[in-house]
Length: 268
Image (cartoon, rainbow, N blue to C red; front, side, top):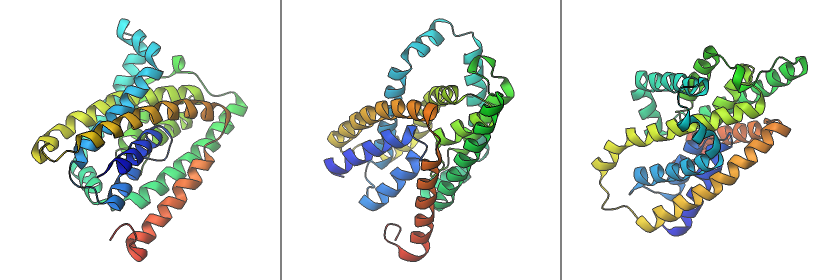
């Protein structure tokens, strides 16, 4: 790994974590392209920490309110969604781990992201016209469980976590801006949980070969790009539809499937 690849990976992590295009899928593809192996697990974790800091800064007022008043409905909803995600991950851990290690499902996962974005746009537009959408204050626990389920699917590389949760929230009737807020708040325990579960693998792999300068640079780039990606996504979801991201993930998914089976440009 060199500084340029660290910058590129940090930029991709920051942007793709919050735009509905899958950061894990993009990082896997780029790590394959760059041939990054040494320190790869630790590097990915630190990039996620960079994006965690970004979301905490953007939603600092909401987080401070949750810390000062932890026993409130929003906290319970986030806990319910997170619990469902954790349950799904633990039940299918081997399946998820194999998918992350081999990347065999990345192409299909990108196509899945494309489909759910299109479906959510169609359902959300219909609900908006009929005035059937509700805000976060009116959200009920079945919706939280459904969004948690979608985040569980988002563990697969190529399935966008933010895309899955935002799409799930919109399909369940949550207003677009509230869907974005809930998705980004839900990313905080998800990123922390991912960090905790990867710690044993980090110690097993060892830190002696970690390129510390590149890790720090990548983390900083992920933080900065993640901050602006959140701001952009908030603006996009309140004023635009997500079909552009659907087209992008569909094209990428088809390319990856073809590359894995025919071209072998990235996946040898």
